[in-house]
Length: 161
Image 1 (cartoon, one colour):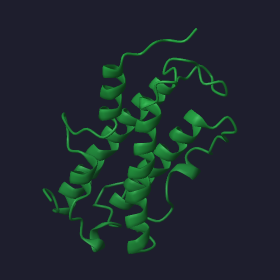
Image 2 (cartoon, helix red, strand yellow; image 1 turned 30 degrees about the horizontal axis):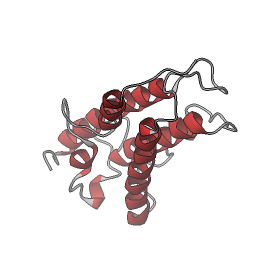
Image 3 (cartoon, one colour; image 1 turned 60 degrees about the horizontal axis):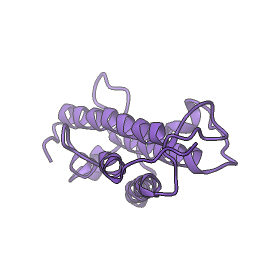
């Protein structure tokens, strides 16, 4: 059975993937971070901004891949989801991580907006997940880690941007 989903629902879900209505959005959270602060772990902290950014990128990639790839291969938790070094390997790696996150977030938005896709159909290679659930997972996950980025920036004395 195919569930007909009204376009306003699809639009709102797609919008939620990058909104900042209840909190800072992705672009604002990462705006004007000095290169020397990207890999800094504040006293008593666990992660740098780079590690949080790269973790978010990896998670969006993984969730998108799971949502649309019948040959999806599960990654190893936590090893495959977190960069080992607190510092980005280069300025180019920082920029590419941001660009890849945005690109794959936008691909998830396109998937959600596809009227031929039943958002509530069980993903065949999953264990009961749906694309709607995976989109909500991205929304929730990103909101959590954006909050952490802001907290790290505050601890480093580089907030607001």
